[in-house]
Amino acid sequence: MRMKKPIGIFDSGFGGLTVLREIEKTIPQYDFIYLGDNARAPYGNRSFEIIHKYSLEAVKWFFNMDCRLIIIACNTASAKALRTIQQNDLPFLAPDRRVLGIIRPITESVGTFSKSRHIGILGTVGTVSSNSYIIEIKKAFSDLTITQESCPLWVPLVETNEYVSEGADYFIKRHIDSILNQDPQIDTLILGCTHYPLLIDKIKRFCPPGVTLVSQGPIVAKSLESYLNRHPEIEKDCSKNSLREFYTSETAENFDRLARIFYNTETKSAHVDL
Ligand code: DGL
Image (cartoon, rainbow, N blue to C red; front, side, top):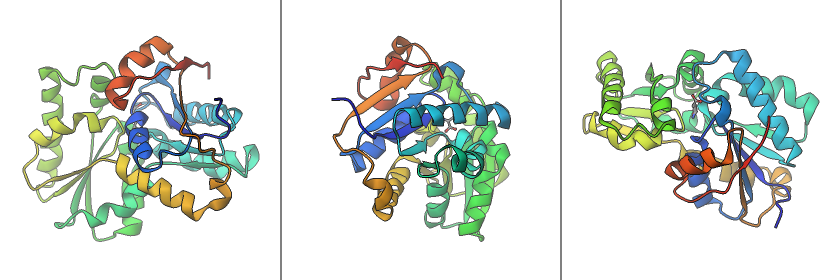
């Protein structure tokens, strides 16, 4: 059956699959279409202009696929491109459609996890340098002390499946030590990149026992469910046949070979030119 009006899930590469995996557990009845811009990933170290350009190309592609609602399941694109897309592009392109990011759901709930009121954000260079997490968290929880750490090699280690190697431990320990040395009172670390849930066991190993690690997937899933409940005018246009489709700007073979690590299920993707 061909999908009619799926919800679009976008990431620079595979990371958004960790979010889709959790969304599906919460609202499996909806149709989802996933796009990974693997040919141009990682986005983490790219400029604002380029991330906006690539993300907007993806959003337009989703519109052509008839998506009424798109989730940018990439922190880097949410941090650097989402606001411009929502405020400048959408009103001209498609005022009746919605593009949401994945930073806001985390920043609205993070204060409930921390007892010490000291938290840390782990993310890509792009996410950290945008200060998006700090700006958003301060709106909801002004009492929190926030420290950020960019981990530029973590995404490439995951995308190349090298994260299981012993060599990866060095880079994981280095950034965990660095953020906890900057603020030893941190009791909550946000995994502010959709690739990082794959590193969670290794990250845990280098954290003291009292530190809580917050993954985005389950929080984004709950937030999307609540959004759909609050917006029946959008919800009614999202088709519900539990269908999934996967697209990549890389070759389908390359996507399907690695996607399993992130999604736990075989994918049968198709190549698209963006
Ligand atoms: N997974 C994306 C994120 O959440 C970024 C990965 C990349 O650098 O492309 O930030």
